Image (cartoon, rainbow, N blue to C red):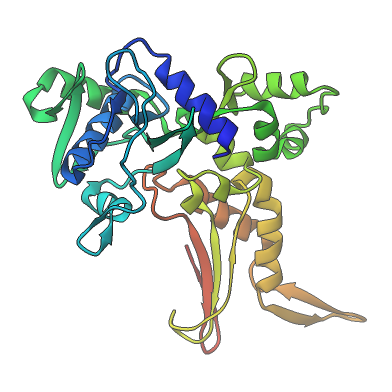
Length: 335
């Protein structure tokens, strides 16, 4: 995060009159166990309150939210020989995106944890689910009314309405989203102004407008029209992999291609790439020889499209994989 963006983020959080169930301020608290419990609680609370991100901010006083700085250095702290960040991720289940931001504000060192909301099940830390009750972190099973409400939220909020990138500027939106492809695929004329582009993207929920020049990019917009999926931490691993194996098993890969773009933005190029790798047969006609691919293009298109559509989008650690391996006389494709 750029320094000016970090400054805007911290000041917007400090502007809240009190802590909330998805926002917590700390000074120098660096107990790993407490941090893990708070991440679980804040992630679940953010889902319950339908917030795109939860936050822990170090270096801000609870009373009055005065910026005073912190001695906490999360990238330096270790548990045994293991870095704090990796230790936390290992003990959180399901694994969620926790981004660490730090930098100076008014000459004081500030640390911010940006925490992804829970998606389809509550987030656990060391096997225990936590929740925020007011400004306190509690075990979720001790508050059945919140547990019921949380599970209800999971059923009400589909993946595509989730947030892949929050609080970004219009410039960032236009660099993150391959909007010319969006208009081309929908057979719409490209607006002659930035305002027209953003308005249409908002209309189809590719992005959501916050205020002034701030937007959220939805999971729908990112997974379909991302210029680079790797720019979205929460869905980066959903990129499609195409692997070609040599021999009868999957022990030796000849080549591998990872799709960089969103599914809609990169679909045509992906199909073209796969078709170009498929073996061809030579047919001899009355006058000419022609080369015919062993699999019809429409079959490849349907195979890939189904692999993309029928995946569990709530599993963040893996994306669709398409490949084939050679046998003695035939080729077998798999997804």
